[in-house]
Image (tube, rainbow, N blue to C red; front, side, top):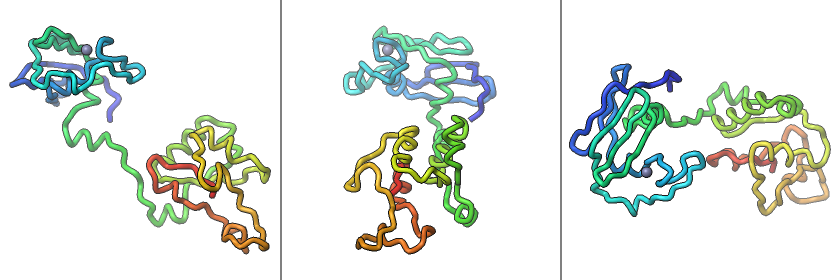
Length: 217
Ligand SMILES: [Zn+2]
């Protein structure tokens, strides 16, 4: 989506819908009940923290805008029942109902193609601990691909969990929060009978979830 500030050029009520014209020539149509349900006023909720006082089940489904008051950067709807709802132009533009725009805003996971298979996202442990921007870059790769590799972590107990806590809450499983892969031929589990270090690979069940989980099992 463009970072350009969107400005309202026109606003009118059309058969219960609110139609906006934008300064770039595009237009948007908003359903009344959707606008009423998303009212940003403090009587209806607190947009800063996402808390809602009003409930869709408590709204009049036949609510209609009575009049509009707009300037280029905001729209105020005065509803027929007297309630006022004010929206910024930017918020309205970012929440346009248009199917094409909604699809363009939607996150699209990246497929694991042959290039990914040979060059999966890989980061140095020291880098992502020393640099917030490097950590963010790694998280974006995890978001897009579902996994990444972190190399050259110190071979010491207790390394994985503090790192995992930097980007999420470790989920406890029947293995506990952390399971170290240790070669121990005296045990019968597959994880303990790795003949070569290169065979140690993560069980990537977390990679198939959304959002991706961290998992060193
Ligand atoms: Zn309100």
